[in-house]
Each structure stands twice: as C-alpha cells, then as structure tokens.
Image 1 (tube, one colour):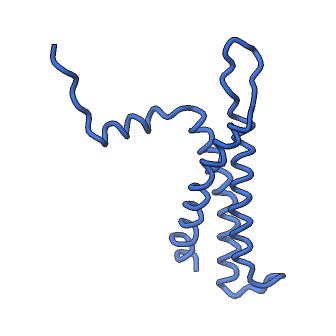
Image 2 (cartoon, rainbow, N blue to C red):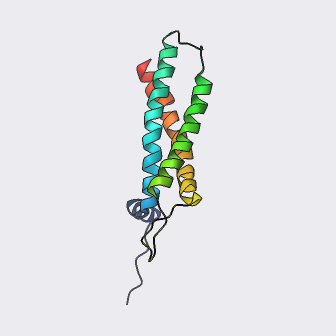
Image 3 (cartoon, rainbow, N blue to C red):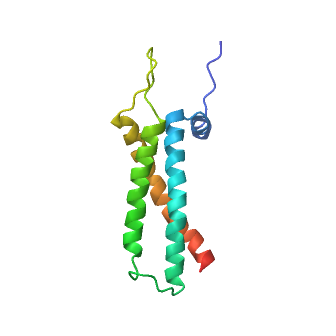
Length: 128
C-alpha cells in the first residue's frame, strides 16, 4: 500500500477554509454585518467632514472611530452569544455561556480593524 500523498500548505488551508466550523462562521458573519453597517455610517461622517460640512460638535472623527470599534466589539459579542449555543449533548435545552460571547469578541477585533481600513484607505479616496 502506498503512503498518502502529502498536501501542500495551500491545499490544507483551502480545505480548512471550506470546512470552517459553524460557530466560527456565525461569529465572523455577525461581526462583519455589524462592522459594514457601522463602517458605512463612519465613512459618511468622515466624507461629510472632508467636504467641509459644518456638523454639530465639530470634528469628532477620533471619537467616532472609537465608538465604531467599541460598538462592533459589543454587538459582535452579543449577537454571537445569541446565535451560537453550546452543543446540546443529550439534553433538549441549548445553553449559552460567556465562551460564546468571547468567540464573538475574538472574531470582531480583526473585522472591526479591517472594515475601518477598507473604509478609510480604499473607499474614502473614491468619494472625496
């Protein structure tokens, strides 16, 4: 019997990507949805200020970015906590623990950063 064929690094990672665990996909999707909506709002605010709009409170871009990141982290954790229960086992009742929220938090951190970078570095120059 011949030994199994060695897979390349790319083949291994592609298979892992295609077969991601459902809780991880849900955590990433919920955080991404929240980040896109809030990122669009931040981008609209940033573009309005860049075009010279006079908004109440003045230029609060740093505070708006901080609120954006905090809102994505909290909403991503909360939504993941709601939609990712622990495995049931033999019981009929689904349980939720802080681990579900932690999964959402750890998924939301890079997503909040990446969406903000795309909004500011890629989309803003196209709109200003």
